[in-house]
Image 1 (tube, rainbow, N blue to C red):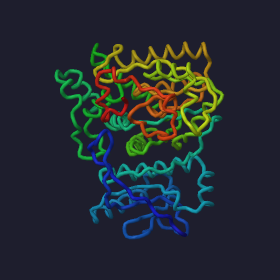
Image 2: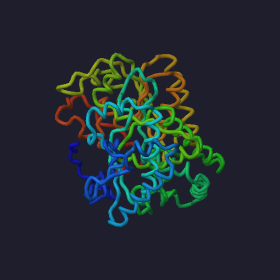
Image 3: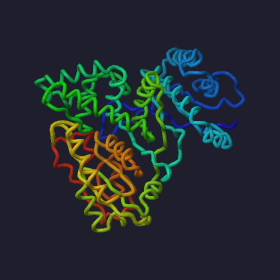
Image 4: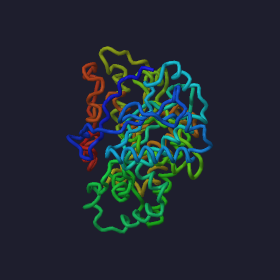
Length: 439
């Protein structure tokens, strides 16, 4: 079978350059996952530094922690260690003939879950030496008829979720240290002490980033109240990922696997992965609908809707007609404290959402509001059955709001007169997040 050329794998450095990761090409052991066409062994060498693992052989076993899976893990790790090269896992569907690709989409959910768990187990076992290249997950359709919400997780949030699942007592102990500390303002923006980009071992730093980048904050009433805030956030975040479809994001993908393995071991739960929605799919979802968004940029979005500019954003693309309304989200990135902790802020925005939906009856709900996003989407999906989408900050570009992170979106094709500059710079410290990507 002819194999397509594999793109150069690039491993991210830890440092940020002008708000973006700098990328450095590295020689790697490339590990593919295929259907093992014409091959009955566990894996075979494609060439010196490329291995194809037969996923059918692995997934036929009763559990992903079978002796076969463990032995493959050991063999792959030993190859990487003997050659002193990092390991890259990739489910490269381009390596499989089109007719086989069609068969993949028809495979049972149980098989898909089994494969995702095997992949997660292999990745976690090699996490110190590996970087995960982005690939296409199993569920590739984006359908308005499927009412399970679609949410994109973030690496900042997933680092904390990883600790919540694997070492909860230690996580709460670190939270207590932060609660009692006198020098948090001096430490909250410190660099990570982890040696690996994929590591979640600097729990204090992970919590600091949840506070500075995603907007989590805890009650100062008592340590029990602070722990309650963190527990409720973690549980609602996980609930959103488990009850909906998880939209994979390249830079955050590795952190998904550690959580997946921990969940599988404790409760046999598996995430349902789906592809990132395309430009056309998002606007198709909006077509003819009343779209309701919760965002800290609600005032600007409502201005766009009132002027009709949300439908005039591009010179060579006709945006389908849809109604748009926005509700302000709390901004609680450190040191902003709009209420008495995350739970209090969540309950306030939830009540406002209830009131809005009861009055206006929207058909589509979207959000861009940091650590409130997935919990809110889960709540709306469960209680109202709307089409729900969360792709984070990127959704603002579909409403004509300029931000550094999306400056390149449809560049050269935009009707710039219909766009507005964002006003997030008025919030303290927001310009410090990832080199100012939100302003």
